[in-house]
Image (tube, rainbow, N blue to C red):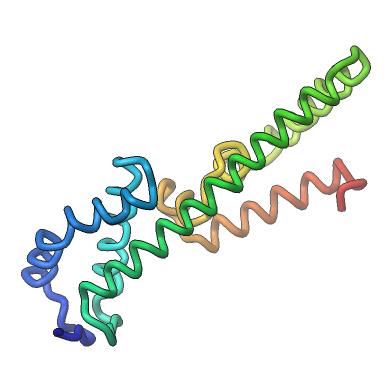
Length: 174
């Protein structure tokens, strides 16, 4: 059992460890996530994080154990995230079925959707884009930051700005 200490992860060691563990970790992730592409993304993300933090990382357990624990935790996070998205989609679907039965409800829905689109158009481009990725596509802040090559703090600030704008137009939801 070799422990990894700070500054021990160089390119050659990292590449060797990646090749040694990648396939097994993907199969392990696949047991949690029934999606091959997503399982590979999770394992790749784990290796990317290790590489990014290689100068500061100090692993107190075996590297193999660390990898499996980290992959398992990322899989569990993804399962939780997918449940939130599924619950949100079910809620929206149920809302639409129950509240859009009559012409009055349908009109209210359309007017609210128009106001929402108008508000999104008043937001600065990046702010609107970040809000849509978060709320409409269900991406996590870290995923948005990675996709747009910005910091998580920038994502948080833009989401906060968008929500403040929405609260001005919909004060009853404060």
